[in-house]
Image (cartoon, rainbow, N blue to C red):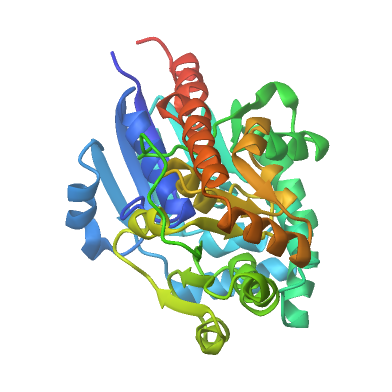
Length: 394
């Protein structure tokens, strides 16, 4: 018989927009191909029917409301203890009750992120914990972020980091398998004390891959991402204010096009700069990326995979990025991208690529080959193998 799999997430895996939701959607679809999948997530119960239409592969879906006043009270109480605030925020008693009920008829639990672990009863089926990113390492980098404003944010991250490190170790002790999204995150987790024998890498999956490099518009540079996040806001500002002015001294027709949801005023104001256009959200970002001559991703802090880079490489649009981006990818990615360590070297790399169509298309073809080789459907095999190994034979 097929195993009965219970998937836990703090956000509904539909619609698959944004890094976390795209990841959970892909994980759920892959798991449903291996067994009977039940999803428990936080959200608006009124969206139940919409989720069932969007996730037809799931056997059942339970949507649990998150009570905001109670969540705020739990976070305040966590500040006085050693519990991570991320776990306290989502430690819903209603979710805990729903998961306890589902565990009674489950063979394997797949929990997405540390946030969902408080939902599990003391005695539960075998557990696969999908950490995705090494959160303690991310918190450490983010607390030093050049784009982070507000002393209270730095203070909160400083308090949260050791708590997250302990929670990662405790979660790994509770689980039979732990997944990370990159080799770098795996190594960070091992250095933090997570047992190496429990860790497997489950890379990001790219859904659509082009056959040939895209047809670009001359001078068109694109940056896109969720503009709610500090790292994306920092990249947008740094590109618009520091890098693009240097590019335009050599290429007057070069223009930066910024796309993303929930652009704050500080990003929208960049539209007033020469050669900068802020568009907000679009229906199909792959169309805009395919029009670009090059995508820029000058990541200065953060350790997670940049989906924007994979999506750009997948349509054959080359990427100019900081070396930090390469650290989150397989070493083969170096052959498909140009890098710069600071604003001047990034500007030089962009200008050289804007002037060289042959190199642009060569990098585009290398990017397509890289995504096919390292981010295809087979990336979920380690997770699916772990589920099959842990499911009891019935």
